[in-house]
Amino acid sequence: MRMNPVIVLAAALLAAVYSWTFYNIPVLLVGIRSHLRARNGGVRSSVKTIIPVGRLPTFSVLIPAKNEQLLLPRLLESLLHQNYPKEKVEIIVIGDGSTDATVDVCREYAKKSRGRVKLLCGEGSKGKPCALNRALNVLKGDIVAVFDADNVPEPDALLNAARCFLDESVTAVQGRTLAINSEINMLTKFVSLEESAWFEAYIRGKDALELFVHLKGTCQFIRKEALLGLGGWSEGHLAEDMEISARLTDRGYKIRYSSDVRAWQETPESLTQMFRQRVRWYRGSMEVALRYGSLIGKPNVKRLDAEITLLGPFVLIISLLGYLAGPFLFPSMGESAIFVITVAGWTAMTVSLIVGALALLYVARPKRKRDFLWLPFIYAYWAFQVVLASWALIEIILRAPRKWRRTGRTGAVNNGGQISVNLKPGNSADDAELIV
Image (cartoon, rainbow, N blue to C red; front, side, top):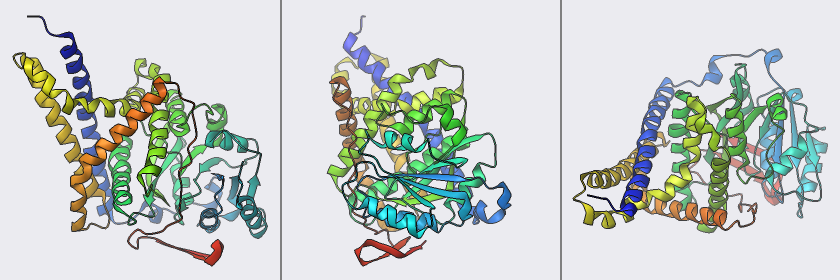
C-alpha cells in the first residue's frame, strides 16, 4: 500500500522534532544534577582559591551604549567597584549615535575615575557588532568582556571570570545573567524562570557534557588574541553572539559556562518588548544555522551539537505540527508507523514541557510554593515563542531588511529583594550601592 506523500513528509518532520527533543532532555537532566551538586556544596569556588595578583589577566570591558543615560551610571558604578585590581581593568563605552546625555555621563565618569572609563563616540553605527568592533583597535586587555547597559555585574564577576581563564585551553566564558526586575509582572516572572532554567539546566548541562556552549551577548568574555584572529564580530548578523560562538567552535576553541560569573539585567516587561527582542534573536540564530550548516558534516561531537542547537528555532516552528498534524494523520491510522509517530509526538511534546517546568522549579531560588501557579502558562508561553520564531522565518523568506531593534528599558529593580541597587535622585550615581 502506497503512503500519501504529504503524510510521509509530515511524519518525517515530526520525527525530526521529537528526535531533537529527546536529544536535549538528557542535557537538561545532567544540568539539573550539576546544579544541585554545586548548590549543595554550599561554597563558591571563588572562596576556595586565592589567585596571586601577578597571575590575574587584564580586562577590557566593552559597553555598547546608545541612549543609555538612565542605566549607564549603575553599570559603571558596579564595574568601578569590582573586587579586582583597578590597574588591570579598563572600561570602554561606545556611545555611537546617542542623542541623550549618554556622552555627558561617560565624560563625567571618565573624569571621576581618572581615566579608567573611556569613551568612543561616533556619528552612529549599524548595530551592536559594529559598535564593538570600533573598540578592537584601542583596547589593551588580555580578556575582552562585554556587558549591555542594563547589566549590574556582581562584585566578584571579573575575579571569577579570571579564574576560568587560568585554564589556558579556555578561549571564552559565558557568565550567568539573572532578572533584576522579575517581580514586575507575570511576563517578567516567567522570563526570569526561563532564563534560570536555560543557564542552570541547559547551558550547564552542555558545559558538563563538553558540548556546544554559546555566548549570549552580555556577561561574556573572550581572549583578545582569539577575537582579533577571528576578525572581531560579524556586522552582517543580528545574532552576533551566536555567530561568533559558531566560529569559535568551528576553529576548535573552547567556550565554558560559569555560574559564578553573575550579572543582573532587565527582562522584557511587555509583549511588545519581547516581540522586538526575540524576533531579532530567532532570525539571527536561523541565519547563523543556515550559514554554518557545514558544521554538521565535520567529524566532531561539539560541532554536531552546535548545529543541532542552532536548529532550535526551526524545530520550535515545526513542533507546532505535533499538535496540528494529528487530525490529518488520524485517517491513515491504519499505517502503524504513522500511528506510533503521532502518539510519540504528543508524548514527546508533553514530556519536554514537563521537564522544562521541572527544570524551572529545581533551579529557582528562593523556592516558593506560589511559583507552581506559573507552570500551567508554559503552554501559552511556548505558543507565543512559536509565533515569534515563525515571524522571524517569514522575515528571512521575504528578505526583509535586517534591523537592530533596541529593546526598551526602564531601569526598574524589583526581584523580591535578591538584589538592591540604590542611586541618588536624578540618576546621579555618586553614591550607588549594590546589595546582593
